Image (cartoon, rainbow, N blue to C red; front, side, top):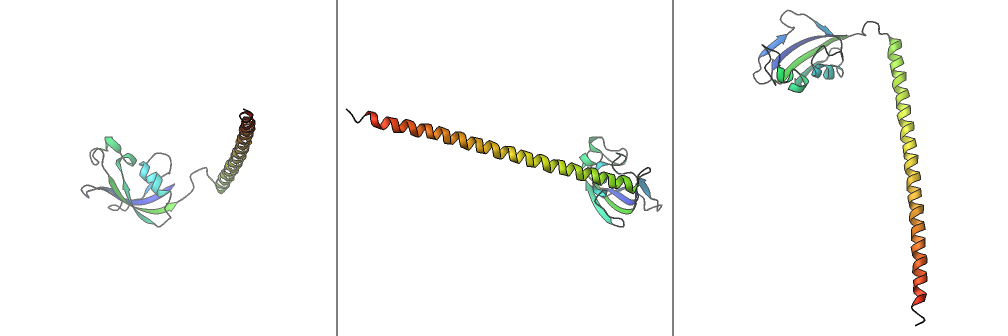
Amino acid sequence: MVDVHYEGTLAETGEVFDTTHEDNSVFSFELGKGTVIQAWDVALRTMKVGEVAKITCKPEYAYGAAGSPPDIPPNATLVFEVELLSCRPRKGSSLGSASEERARLDELKKQRELAAAVKEEEKKKREEAKAAATARIQAKLDAKKGQGKGKGKGK
């Protein structure tokens, strides 16, 4: 869960369409649950508590072709000034689950590295087999050339 203060304006006109500053309210939501526009889900993941960021949101990361009537027209680019007030684990989450997630990610990384090593080894074997086949073909060609040299000399 995150808590933010924000002010949203239309990029085209600079008109404020929403703010928490007027009544000093706090807006709270859970990241990654689709409860806010996609631009916020992306941007707030990189912010630190206390940081203020200016987020310019293209329509495809905001309200798109539908807009959000009556305040936000279709295909509007939005600009938000967002202050991240706090960030806390979601309900049912614990440090244990965070460390479990880290362990899972570490295991996935090891699996990817192992798969990459296997793939590299297979590539090396294919290249060696190709080189050996090329050498055999070249040896056959050289042998045929050697046979051809003696045929015309006796006439």
